[in-house]
Image 1 (spheres, rainbow, N blue to C red):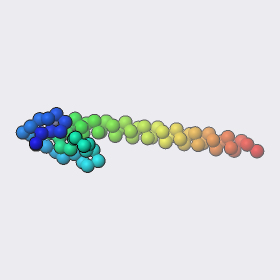
Image 2 (image 1 turned 135 degrees about the vertical axis):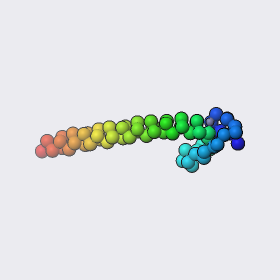
Image 3 (image 1 turned 180 degrees about the vertical axis):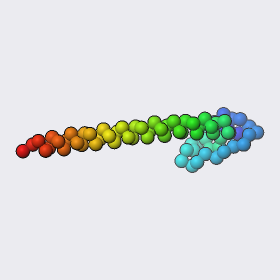
Length: 73
Ligand SMILES: [Zn+2]
C-alpha cells in the first residue's frame, strides 16, 4: 500500500476521517498527515474568524435596519 498523496511505499499509513476522504485519497503517510493536519488547523482558524466577522456584520446590519424602522412614523 502506498500513500494516496505522495505515493510513498513501505511506511505506516493513517486512514483519513471519512468526511475528508476523496475518491482517490483515503490513506496517507505520516509526513502527509502532518501537512494535512497543519492545513486543516489553518483553515479552521481562518473559517472561525470569517464566521465571527460575518455574524458581527449581520448583527450590525440588522441593528441599522431596526433603527431605520424605528425612525419611521
Ligand atoms: Zn505521503
